[in-house]
Picture (cartoon, rainbow, N blue to C red):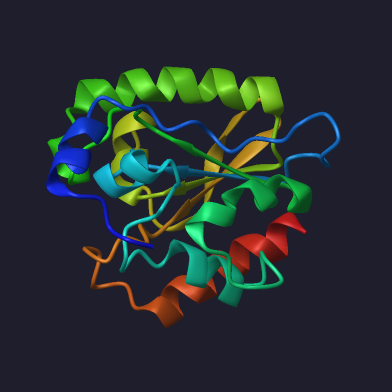
Length: 184
């Protein structure tokens, strides 16, 4: 994949990134992965977790969620396996720390409505800081959470961004695999 140009990245700031959700012929949504917000590369390409160095796709495969390593452009295959992707906030940014807490909280309201509509078995929030802000739970740690949204349980995962270097790929695989064991 060729990286977008600087002009394409700047234009992506105004481009929403559609969710990856099941259609009528797909199985029940077992896990809805929720990123913090689209990065500029993702918004420019139209594919979630598309920035080179983001570990989402390799970790998703290594933890057993997908039978093979998917490229971001193959994200449309996820619903066939009961998986989907959304974001906490819709505004694309170069870094998640460009978002305000108010944007995250507002996105949390939209997220709750989406979860109520699709009723996944698990909502997997990839980013503990965003989870703490949206769910007003400063003490949350990675793993299963007590609150639910209707019947949907919530699991917090480490952010797979390459900027989250204190989480190794191996540790991330372990955490994603724990969720997979609970969901399937």
